[in-house]
Image (cartoon, rainbow, N blue to C red; front, side, top):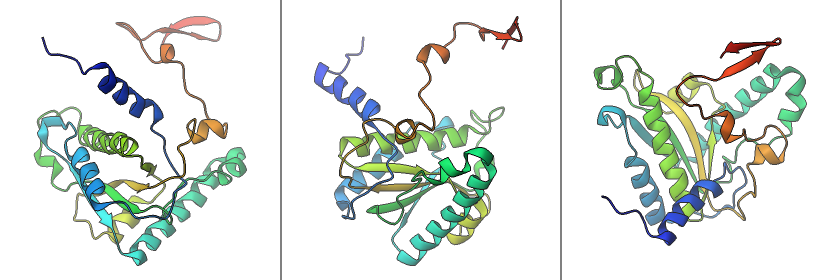
Length: 223
């Protein structure tokens, strides 16, 4: 039987999981190239369906391009605010990205030619996206272990970012990742601190065998 990590190693893994935060506040210091390489390698060792490795990572070093990506995010931020109706003002008070301050800006994308990969995707083609999400999570946890913050920005028009990065047909961006040094990690997820949302109880997310029965207008029905 395989041996587990020792107590200190196991505690470190769970600590990284529980202390990981979606960071939006950064210190304008560069990221050590060796550390960045370790984080990219961590992402590249993520699990992927059919071992297709669909992630592609663009490191943004051109300040003009960084500013153009920021403008794309700002445009979508305003559109999202308008779509939120009565929560518009509360949303506009939230800091949703740190693109101008982070030491590194990365764009995580899905590769082109994904239709060739059938293994694990015949009935669930979106598993390529799930694989990219695993790569992002690997990097996120590794960044926390390195003492670096990372933030996932998803407020952008896909076609605008595709054009800015000259992506080939079929490829598409999934996330803009802000990575860099921070003064401190948030004690709680920022959206929880700002009372935008709260963490669900684990018991509400874990079922056994079948979807639980739910109360609907005084009657029990299957969810």
